[in-house]
Length: 507
Image 1 (cartoon, rainbow, N blue to C red):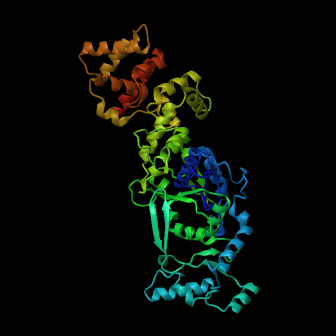
Image 2 (image 1 turned 90 degrees about the horizontal axis):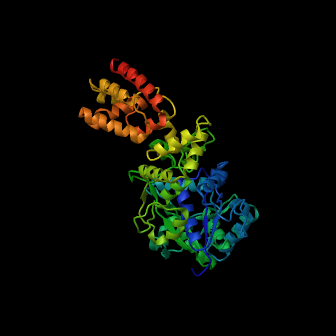
Image 3 (image 1 turned 180 degrees about the horizontal axis):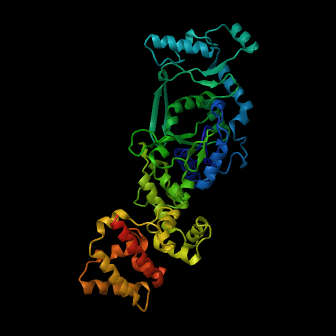
């Protein structure tokens, strides 16, 4: 890189941080780390009408949980603060006035009611998409159409106004996007965007460009939804005579069926989280998050990294350091990336299997509130983790390792329990009663001999045996389960299980 890498994540505190926003932050983080640069967070709260209390704190907490905290930002320090735009309010108006004085922008005094009347009139004339632009501005109330004396009078009287960009007619705006290549837009397709509002606040467009320049941002890596705004931003850099940063517009995150952008309301409706952590609205409505659902942050980040980027290899599991090493913007796709909840669970499963046993046992101990011994929980982890997606699954699905079953899988029993099954299980129980050694290999050897003597297939006895002991039709090896429970417990469960199953079969 020819200049120091400084990138920023610039969310608006208008609600919780969607997983698409976390991915944007992640790509900025990876890019900065790869080039020994600086990753900044800037809160863009210029739209005070949509400000949501608690949203800024949520954003910071979500980034912290995800393990991708910036090094500069609100509460983090840095030499380019404040890092909240509303706290920078005083600096923007001079930049807006500078554009007016250089004939790149103008004052507009039209009221909201007057503009709404213009839109309604245009709609009645068959022009539903009326815009304030190079054509229409000549008939509106602004400093381009009013005499300078009237403009001065309105300003001195404190009349409300906005400052709008003065778009030139029929001019191509060209810029190079690091993901999409050259982008060319003609100014005839652009309206005269408001840069400075009547409430004394800049719009996103002005504040974004001024802040990126004054904070010495080298690369703007942001979502595709900002691509239509990029030509205006390029023009603003030109208008100020500043060197523009390099741009990279990331692909959208799509719904699992590929039909449209993944939205904040899709998650719980479709059965998966779309937020990093739980968010409760002011009305008390809860949106679930990955953290509270039991996902490991590393699994969440690994999944997000591969939504729109690929390493060019078959590798799928990456630590954060490995992602930094492998990441490059030229391997980010232009096309939208379909979110796959099944693949997300697969990542979680892989990370669960990689967890140190001591950590899993500690988590289970917390979940069970100290109800079981360290040895019991260690065996639960050993037997259940290959089958689990979440830590809690091991406790829920493997509860029969810790407590006698209270219910039995009636559907499996009705399908698999044959007229001769009860007698076979009673005979197998008699064999087990006489075993001198009750370790897994001894039980397995006795079982194989029992099948051989009776000329039986494994399924004729093993599944019914499992049902009497655990109440369920699938799980880890029955010989390991039996050895862990011990002879006395196994025989007792077999007796109780046969009685319960008999009752179910006669219902």
